[in-house]
Image 1 (spheres, rainbow, N blue to C red):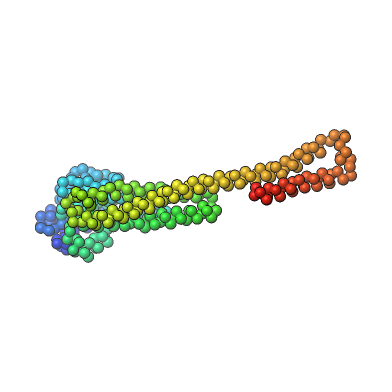
Image 2 (tube, one colour):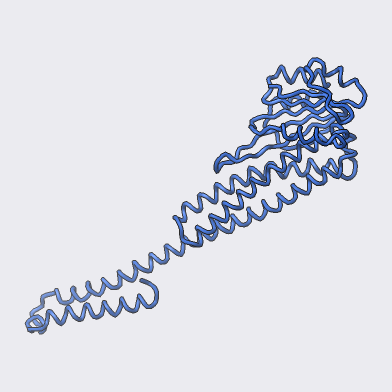
Length: 322
């Protein structure tokens, strides 16, 4: 589906144009065309390939989707794939944006993502001096907007991790539930990690050293995007290490709880073993057992049993077994 198709010249918007007129505007000096598609049909991409002269391999990747973040050069144009990540309740949903950028055009193809880029276009149009840089600045603006949307996601991951840590050390909830929540958090962090790490390598090719011609005047901007990705990567590493530690602590807490239960069971078993031992001895009914015919034999035996059991209970209580 076509979202918009706009022609710009000298950093200023000329007008919204029909797709059929794209090739005519591309011939004009200092003019470039910015087109945005969402979940396009094969026919729409074929039309864009015809108007912009896109490489067939790049069009094939954009048509199929499910590509890892990457940057590929085709002559004087680049093809970039960036993953979008957004929160849907406690679950992370990932989408994909394929960006074709050439000397005088930018085409973005968005899939499986409800977040649009109208704000990016509005921001670029408010800065004609930057928009005058052409497709290189538009490519930066799109990538920067996507990367900036990673920060609320990682903030949420860190907040959830702190909440789980409080539950673990505060004794709230079953440890099994805490471990399940940690694994859910680990899965969500991997979704974001798979979007960030390959993109770092892609953006690294857009600043410093030999860069594509369209990024020659925007290297500082792409370096800023790379710095943001480095920050996110560092925070993801911290989250990963903390999750691993929290899982180990949770398992250790489970072991400690099991040991405490075993101690209590052993202590009560020892106490009741005293009753069993005394009852077994005095319940044998031999003829020559003087206490059987003694007037105070029964109450004395009961007092001895309760006395010994009470002493054992006191000792176990004092040692923390009960």
